[in-house]
Image 1 (cartoon, rainbow, N blue to C red):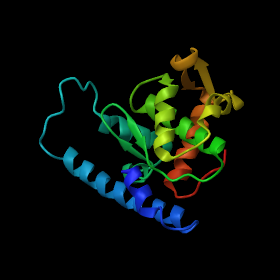
Image 2: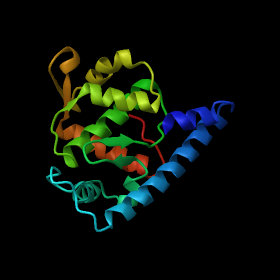
Image 3: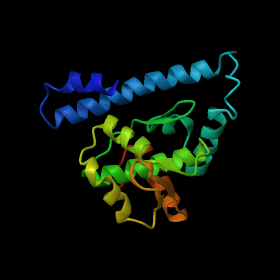
Image 4: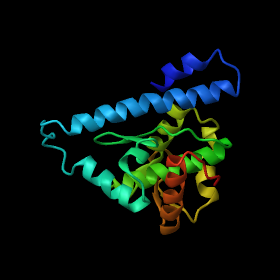
Length: 184
């Protein structure tokens, strides 16, 4: 969907391209969020291999960050095993990487029960958002070591939030859902 929107807004000049991209993206995801909510209200039973309902865990995240499900759906699309980050972000690439990473790490822990998240999963989300300079990703994560812990090497690197990082991630998610972006 993101690639499709990029193609649509490509002929526009900045800043109109960025604004149009944000508007179209929010509209598309608002529509898909409404469809997802309607689908969860159907009588269909969840798959047997799904241990805990994503909806229930999303509600817990809502309580944790002090937002409604609708507000949270302007930042994320929750799928059964992973999250898709959809909120537009402003700032330099390092700031974008930090905001997305902390937010995704928080969702992985609170919603999906994963204390550690592979860096490759975060990088994939950043690529989908069009965030550049990913060769500096590890250094950008290391820059504020009080927010995250790292384990592993090479392609097996994983990150998790520290208590300070959880607090920061909650603030970032609140700001993104409110339409303003907190610079990290």
